[in-house]
Image 1 (tube, rainbow, N blue to C red):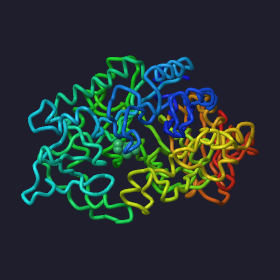
Image 2 (cartoon, protein in one colour):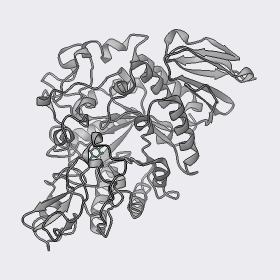
Image 3 (cartoon, rainbow, N blue to C red):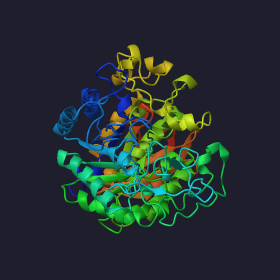
Image 4 (cartoon, rainbow, N blue to C red):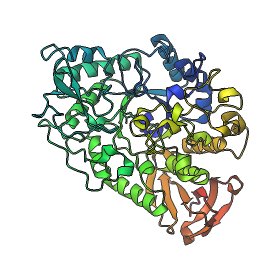
Length: 532
Ligand code: GLC
């Protein structure tokens, strides 16, 4: 692999939701020692970096995204010593570790908030977003919580409201206050000094809110089925221009260290998303690109998205792609098992850093969660709308034993009935399994620098097919992806000569393309083009 690219440009990131990966102490919840036990698996899979969703002390109102102490580990996950041991093992294998940093809000249990809510004059009085009631005693303005309902919570002691973009248990920090910025940079420094390789930064586009507290405008396209949080646009609560200054400070800190990085969670249209790369050296290294999750799964749509994204990237901007995470329905549930293979090929052959979500590599799908087992606060606040995130957060399915080898105790979320068939052990030695296919894809990406860092060109293909070439130092690979359930002939005369290196359908590996190539239903192929 060429050395002029950084590890986070060449590498593949794998997201672990720690509650659900591996329980080592029999309490039904995953932990750090459990993850440590599974490093052989991750190394054999062929991923380069692990991103852990939050592991800090937390009342778990939002399962760790409500942090009560930024510089410790929640006992449910382990201890700082166990964290250090995990990090050392990851590094010992030549892998990297990204932590989830949640700067927009703390838990209401954080010492800073406990102090802040005590009076209007205490030293941390201005560390959160406090505001007097409106004339009628109600909330200061119409800002909403992303989980639904008002974003303002009245506090009886201060006789003021505080703003929370998410749960009322997650008060937003006041990032306009330089003391808050300094304290949070210290938190980053704490983990960087411990050796972490970077951060995934939670809701980074939310950090700064309008100074004048202007009312958010109504959403003209509001569809109640998507949840009441969408009634208004978030014009004055997200993507404020001053957020880039704050990001600049974080980047400056990261760049004091060797090859550290940050990837920002940002749900915005591409033209706005790319502004988070900054102007060169002052933005996030990667603003998460979620288009493969949010767009309809159609060849023409995806092709257009890839081409426009490539065109929109600034010169200093390295691309990235994501197929799944802990906030969205599982890939397999969204597009089905056959297209999930096509999608994996797309993710791992596009230009840019891919992020995988644990369990997708064995074809895990959303689980059904009966009402009495619901955990996610989003589902509890707006039940029955399909907004809940428990379905995609179920325990990793390791084998056919009790609780799928995840835990000796009843897991915090249920396992699906088909975990007996869909698991790592069952797929490990099976040539045709999803897991074997993923391993081949990841190995191919590692073997062929063209796939990781080569140039990208749209290949011009029929309506239902997305095709592109990736080239590096004279070696050209052609990727053809059939998004349909029909066979699709692709003709390209002298341009289409070569050999299939990998197919979503195993028996097709090795066949030749001689001027044309007919894709089977739901087939994706990587063809090594002949030099002619
Ligand atoms: C991010 C996280 C999500 C969490 C929210 C509030 O979107 O990915 O899981 O609920 O932030 O922290």
